[in-house]
Figure 1 (spheres, rainbow, N blue to C red):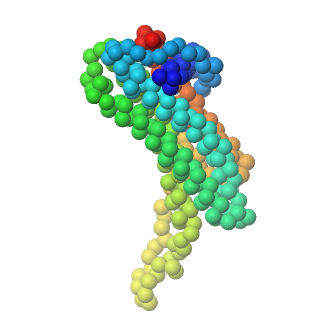
Figure 2 (figure 1 turned 90 degrees about the vertical axis):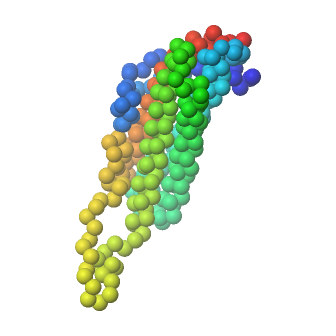
Length: 252
């Protein structure tokens, strides 16, 4: 019960935070919404009611909200790693490739953890209580949780795609793709050189492209991480404002 009380308190704190400028979910890239800082966490009590909305609050909303916040904590660590990774990419003459690979592996671990936390929210949304609900408060809970999931999952998937593109770039850097290497046997037709750019150079809108300038790349990748954090914080605040009045009705 202490965990539930703390989770409800967290919802209250975020709901009380200033409302950032709206940012449509359909334009999560390039993650440009301003965020808000949550105030100290008050305690509003325990969730005890057996009402449908309270049951969903206790079993689905609070664990999902906790997962979102855990992903925030993990991503704060990622934010510190990303500029360092950019520096390694831009200093390949003085840093052996193993340093870059090791740094990327740690970011990959973060991306995996973020996706696991997003999956917790996804499973909550798939609960039978959220399948064609008729209770207005349960409907509101589901809609707010869906928005929160979209933001949390988008951050996780985007980071994961960044990692995959960097992995491809590392792999290609270690392979000789010249025509001489693939000419084959004597007399065989020489294969034309590939003209398809590396995925790392064709990132989707909003994802940073590391161009080789240490200072610029570190600034770009850091801002990318900051913007993703702001978007998730916005939807945490937004969903908390929906959850708060329901949580207060359910308090013990």
